[in-house]
Image (cartoon, rainbow over all chains, first blue to last red; front, side, top):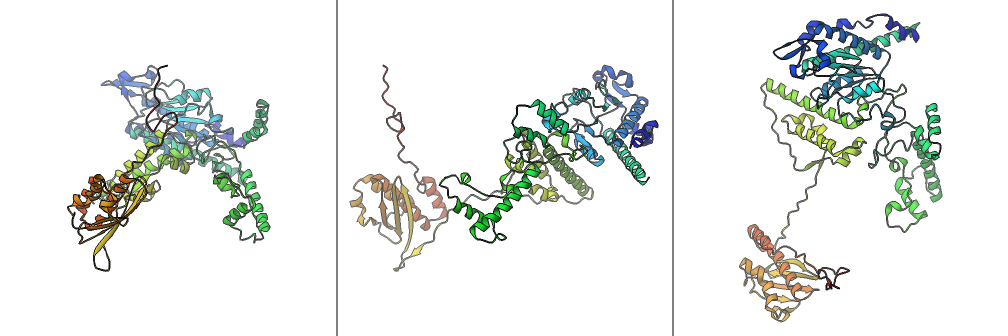
Length: 216
Length: 369
């Protein structure tokens, strides 16, 4: 059992996350498109490649690195049987994200976030609740263009976060930010596909490893 | 779990035993008010099982007591036996002693929402309102299905189905019914959003595909309009057509039989109208239906009346004769009669006197000092 948990940590890319996407895929899915210059957040300046006709362009090399780190981390969490919660407050992609979560066997929350969900869970749900082990933000802002409450709450409850940060978002409290577009449907479908594939891969690997251990 | 219980015991040292027992069980905390989604973990599964065993045992004992066969002792027999053994004069049926199966007595509870490893069963568990949001998710999925189907039909140049759904005889589920269905408390906003989504789904032309799904949330409204049945004319021995009508006004009740081919003779309680109603106003009231239809000299009338006073009896006979005349008259003329107020029962009755006042409306004389 110990061997099962320590073996993936020795490899840098145990789940071969790098093979899931290329820079060309990101470009075709319009991940590099940011908002206008006026919407730019100060802390996003290191991730921006440049500005063309007032529209910010995100640096896809950095996005590649961040995305690989984030997917690797998600895979490890899924391998160890952690609860992953997909959060987004974009109404357009609510259905897509919920279907993705269902397909992975993980959880989603794309609706109104009740205040004490993470911080007051034992009162809201009951005494024996298990909180999520990873929060994946497919859009960091809520409907009023402010940072989602869940980022702050996860930081309070020591829950690691993975988040897609656009040029108008604050990447501060997110453990694994992924600078990229969160408004285009193609971009969101790409992210959903990538997360789904990583989680399924990780779970399959876990099952295989357990089966091999059983045989011994 | 044990550690948690001990911690709780230390914290709530003064709490009664029932409360400590309650905190051991792990079910979702759902607010009260709705029976189906009532408070957290009041009844555990083990408790309900024990109740069911006790109920079955008690049923057999009762059957033996009544001298009946325990195997074929139905719920109605139980009710009768209890009513016999514990007679109660209480008016409220629910206050009387009753013995029902525990599933009817204890409201449906939501069981524990997560498995042994702590992972919740439902993928929307962390939203708080999992049933409601999963319902919205499903409905939206049906909506997208219908849109896809529509696009396919448009691509193949086939006509979109145009059969109009009859929405007149159906209504959507009320908020309380939906709460019962979902076992979860809803807010008015949530409910209205769900109904709006359903209406959007129904408004699409190809919504017939998801007919089954939509019907889960609609109920038939029974037709309340009752068309007034006009009785056909009856014929007596001489072959003269007649019809009857009943009327009332205040405390007076009257029945009238109107004969055709008459001379305008009216008999009330065996006496002529001139002798029974000496006042002109009452006789005018009696003649009004005939005068309105222009049939003054053409009908005979025999009526019986009781109760009330002079004016009330006149009004009652007027209503009775108007109802009787409906059989002789066309639909258009009947509509005119209805609009003239001849066919409506006069609802005015004497208003009661209220305490602190001299009459129904008159207050006592106001004295300044």
